Image 1 (spheres, one colour):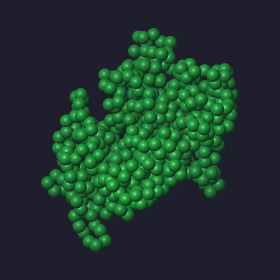
Image 2 (spheres, one colour; image 1 turned 180 degrees about the vertical axis):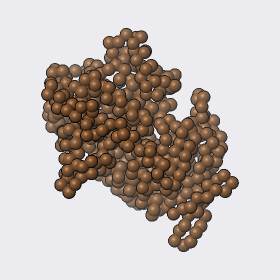
Image 3 (cartoon, helix red, strand yellow; image 1 turned 135 degrees about the horizontal axis):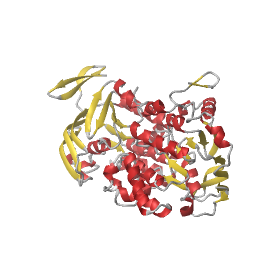
Image 4 (cartoon, rainbow, N blue to C red; image 1 turned 135 degrees about the vertical axis):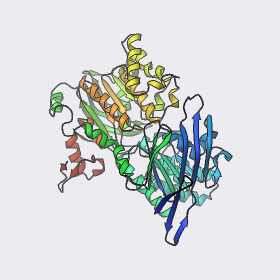
Length: 538
């Protein structure tokens, strides 16, 4: 436990251990830190003063693009060495100034799991990936083997040890990235939105692992996250960032409950009604389906990921695609658009078989946003990227496209970045840009792979409003989402996958009841409880 006081403007934390009271030296000591990226008119960080101590669990939150990830890069020593820009002030890790060490030079002390886990995976197999860090630290072979095993087990990914990295789902890659950093036994562990691509069960497992590391091994942990519900009970300190500054700091979770995304959404959407009219679902189901999928089978490199998948979707439906990491959700989306060729089954759109249609033809009716936003960014400015799909897939004229894109950029709060390189945006901003590029040409079906990743509560509301508008216009949305509260707020149906099989296809509340009966309560919204018979109560 700790007690904070102020001396000379700096936080001093007194840690009380079993053997008495001692003054702990900070693992990380930041003084007067400011950083401005090259080409930017405004600093990403401004006058940051922060100390992180052994055994402390620090949660950092704040709006998308407020500087949280830049702070993580400074702590890990990648700034100023690997990113062009002007840095002022100092960052010391266990007394070592990051300016004096090359990028990665402090990897045995500080470990960073970045927002995009794919960007830090560099070997072919999971086993090699987790062993890579300890090998570079010249750890003995026997100990490396033990670390690989224990790290993968800690994040619930031991069964992946022999898999090829490129065959993993986004959530599986996230767990492997966390394991690869854990294997180096850092004194400071930084995780940038570690639960963004994880299903609720894996999220619980990973956070329990972090809590054990803090308690048993005195590891200092800093987690950057928008999803605060599960972090509130295990965090010692909270920081709210805004415009590159620390706007608020507290040892109590109470001030931060107002930033919980799900509560914000539920204030504006009543789960029981599922929209403006409680009978909407029954009405749309009475018409002809716009999309019909029957006995679909698809996979990668001879491995079946999904099989015997059948469902239909009607105009005016927003459908959540849920399930554990690796259960086949992304594979389904890729097969629908034709990016991944199905092995068996049929797909009917507007009553016509589209199995033989090319991706470019299907894309006129189906707009896909990838799980990793970097995979569909091609232009050198945000404005060009936002209108690129419309140039090829829309029947609108040039002036209409320009106007529509400008309006969408404004609606999604990206207008100020119009002339910037898209890759300079934060993860959440890139995800919104992907969505804009699809919305701009108005496809009947939106296929969205985890669109809420990286979104703070305000920006999440923008997404929910856009999906509601699409629904009111008779469109369909298929959305992979790990957030039950968001599903309850804006979806009418749930498609739930388990081990490549579609095991639930039902209206939302009925899906919650089935999940409760299966003992999968981690997939239920926070506003719901179950009685002894598994019936959902609110």
